[in-house]
Amino acid sequence: MSWQLTILGANSAVPTLQRYPSGQVLRTGVHHILLDCGEGSQMRMMKYNEKISRISMILISHLHGDHIFGLPGLLTSFNLYHRQNPLLLVGPEGIKDFVEHVIGTTRHDVAFPFEIIEISEDYEIVVFEDDDMVVSSFPLKHRIPTYGYRIEEKINRKYLDKEKISSLNLTHSQIRDLMTGHSISVEDNVYTIEDLERIRQPRIYSYVTDTAFLPECAESVFGSTLIYHESTFLEEDKKLAEERFHSTARQAAMIAQQAEARHLLLGHYSSRYSDIEKFQKEAQSIFPSVFLALSGKKFLIESNGEIIENQDFLMRRTGFRSP
Image 1 (tube, helix red, strand yellow):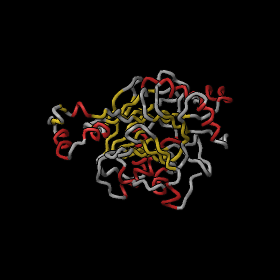
Image 2: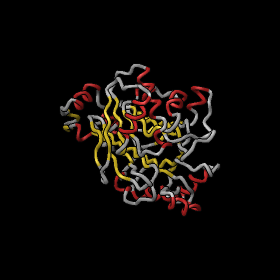
Image 3: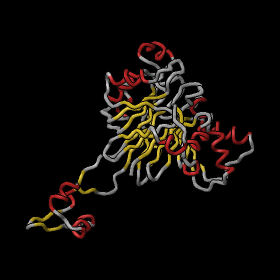
Image 4: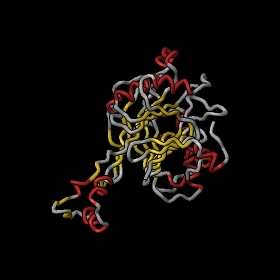
């Protein structure tokens, strides 16, 4: 099953009429994860056919408004929808006070199972783990405490190599025997699943937003299938990026290269730029496989590590074309 990433917003600081603040939904098959929750995130989830009720985890990078101002409304909606499913919220120290103050002031006591994990460590830690995945946080370099996230798939089963199976003309019964741990005989040769398996690398999605150029974070996102890395500025405005603790598209590409990632997804663009394609061209001078995050775009992360950019999804499903 493909992982699916939906971009709710990828603009920095303030929304524009065509670009919205940070927010993404990652579907892993088991979990629906919301990464940051900028203003209006739940409205865009509805527009982009992401079911709000299925969100099981919210990962907040930092407490700047363009990353959290959609959170109070979303939590209130969960209450009004009589949510029963548990929700995990992970974010920097202070996220608990923020939620309790806003929700308490509006007299909307959380009525569903709700756990908040606050991060204060200056090193990589595991914030969630189950049978399907591991989620880690790691520190970034911004004006306030900020964290990136690494979401790594666990491989819980063995996969047979289709070409090897085809070359041996195995029957369904023989394949079933292999998958249940038995050996089989083919033309006087004995095979086990280890002889015929396909080694599949786990999918890894890494989320790196609002940070000055930080070469150290390449270690935390090493081997990622897809890295989302902020690119607030172009290299021509590198001085502004340094002053405001942000990165350029070229610097994002350097991180992807150092991390030996498969693909790079750029976002968090400054409103000063109208031509977003310049970011892609700049990054591709360093790193070949570069995608652009824009509201409404959906990306399929395949089990073989390939990325399918599904730009026409909104047009087919809703008649709405993303800017």
